[in-house]
Image (cartoon, rainbow, N blue to C red):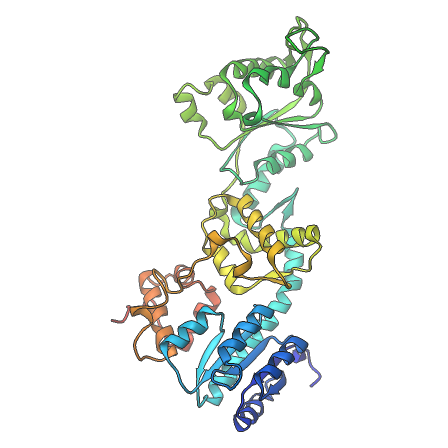
Length: 465
């Protein structure tokens, strides 16, 4: 075969020679390179050698069961889609297969039209992933702005606001939850401003001892206090003709706030112990995760300083507000940590992506960065899977609202019936909202739509008793 579809490979493992021949013959015209093995150990060797996109295996075989084949294939590369076949269907084995990462579970004798349709779908998904890799590279380049990554409406609005504010600001207040990238916003403002060639000076207000605050900000002269054995330039003077970034301004002591206000009003600093003010021209960016209006009401922050700083306010969105950026951020961070750790990690498995999409991210982008860094460090191959993620992210339940065992997946119904019921219940609970139902089922929206068509489900669909 000479077309572009030859990059898709399929390994079929079945100890029954007749069944193996039937399956290979049935799929030989699907534009896929097919490898066969009667011995499951030989089949595993072919998987290791050929690195296929799809593996089709019988469940009950001598020497090595289909479940063990599944485990070894997933351990080798979790991105490979494994389809199990069995003449001895049970609800328990179906659930176990799903939990261990099976892409599908078919009853024997397998319907040839159904098999062709399922394998063709998996092959097309594999081709789509191949195509998406190149597209994502271009999208990632187009979605970066001064070290920030995003293409969600919230981030485009943030980038636009920075561009509009940067040429003109004297003071800016950047607000947002911890881990949302407030320092990146400050750096972007500085780098887009007329003083971009000046110093960008950072002071974390929560990390400075209260008694040293004034000296750190404004400097001191020799002999100003015990231990002041020489003149010291403060951060404001160091930021002259540039920008000073006051991170966590809400932690600044009230006494220092009053002196900061005078600096902002007069553009002059007075070193501790000196009587001679020094003229400075520094742009000031303050940031906080605190509610400063509440701090004002509680007498922890000066109201006049707040209004001086917040002439322009820029809010950084939380990661929960821009979850559509998670795949892009993930790709950016995988590239970063792959280089840092000298590893060839390229992507996450689909189930790992689903786990990230379901998480609420209270630590925002900083938390995502830690998770991806952990995953890149732990991954043994090219793909980060669930077991490579931090323990707190791992959830054992499969079905929405509970474990994979029990009433929702029990009884004598077929795998298809279980799947149909789960989807119908999820759609009913979501009131027909496909995105919400897909999140509850931990699958992509495209996958949900495919399964809805497969089961002839309309929406909203009432849950069956």
